[in-house]
Length: 237
View: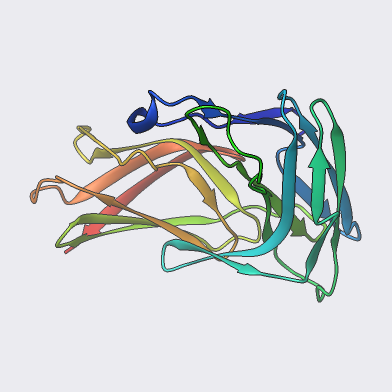
């Protein structure tokens, strides 16, 4: 995936009256995959704004458990340089090396985190600074035609209906344009966070409010990285 991603930060409506000192970064690629014996890669970071940007670069282990995401520091993925100073228009190559991994039968996921280091220089006039944070998915996977294997379940709870997808496959999937309907075909509104990665061996969960008690099954549809997604899911009481 070699397209260029431009990332900028803007002030929220609560501070709209105050000018934000925003920076922009161009990141390429926006996702990294290392396959088979390949254990090194690079990403290119470009400061596309008119102000200098100082960045801290870190690698985190990325897991999913209990329907939520977990990030912890790791030394299995190393990023160099760990600190980068980019003048306006400057480009920095960040080198990645996966080290210390035992032979793997399924994909291993990391997140590369690029955080803007706050400037000590005072602001000119009234205003605020918005600090950048960029998260780049990094996947290390063995050779072979690995695919995700998604399974769905739904269960009623006091806060609503809990919809969960579990990936028993050896490779991640990424859900897009996810939709749910009743078994009779009536649409049900999903929370706005209804897309995202489902890691190998991981799961994602969403709370879906206002599902009528007489609904006994759901019909799931959407798009994944390997084609369309379609599933009929019985609702557990």
